[in-house]
Length: 250
Image (cartoon, rainbow, N blue to C red; front, side, top):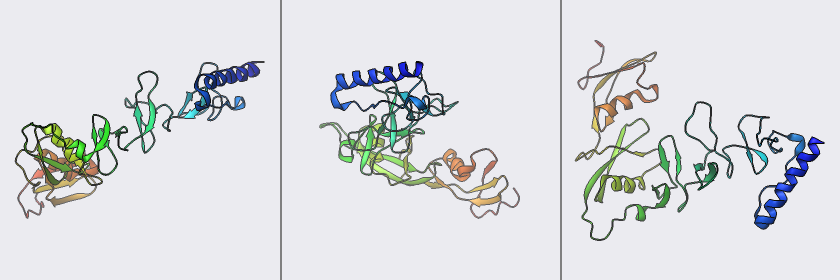
């Protein structure tokens, strides 16, 4: 009897959705025999307990992180996530949903502290806009050349983009529309610097031995991060030295 009541309840919800939304209602009756599992009905409490990573969407258990479904929240994480090509968007009401991102006029692909768009587009106020829009300055506003540093994920200095703008924040948005894949805009101003500086260093990475390096960066702090790379600061000893030093005495 409980199974029959549950099926009747799901059909009633679906019928009401169709009546209110016409044929646009995307939810079909769920499979009552797979309650709590992907594609099956949510349980009576509106939960999906058969498999981790499932959420109840329009009375059906669906995998989180997919388009039109709730964002995933991994244990211990504070930021929700979605599958590749999707971003987590908070509607005016209800749960955060995964939507396609990166296209002009759509939401930026945000995650891991970055906000990206498709080639030729820049993220402006969480929306992907054309480069011309990102670099536009209001008529009559006085501009000046502002240098913006371009780095990789480890803060290694790559190049400098000079933008005519009135503020550094606007210059960063404009420069962000000119980046190649795997390039990032440095968050901090670099002043009059026109190219990355080489920092001679002795580097001792745990289990990899000692070697000499000249990372290109916009500051000593950036150089420390750059020379350690994916090893991170733990187990990576940096010591400024002179060019040509073999680091043997370190």
